[in-house]
Amino acid sequence: ITKLLQENLYYPRRARKRGIVGEVMVKFTLSTEAKAHSIEVLSSKSDILSRAAIKTIEDLSGKFPKPSEELILHVPINYSLKM
Image (cartoon, helix red, strand yellow):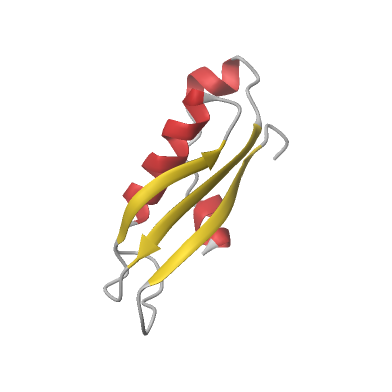
């Protein structure tokens, strides 16, 4: 799931231009249909990156691997300009 998030990461152009980097810790529930809901930012130093992390998870909702039971996940999403 972390790999899927990093590969499909939404990184706003505005944040890239300003050199905004960091980790956003998110918590969300993954249903048995692979849908993400109850998305919550637990820690972040940037509002722009927080919104981007939520958008990344929302965009991937339904594309995650389907768990056998509903899961509550805590996932770090790293924003770095080094690629």
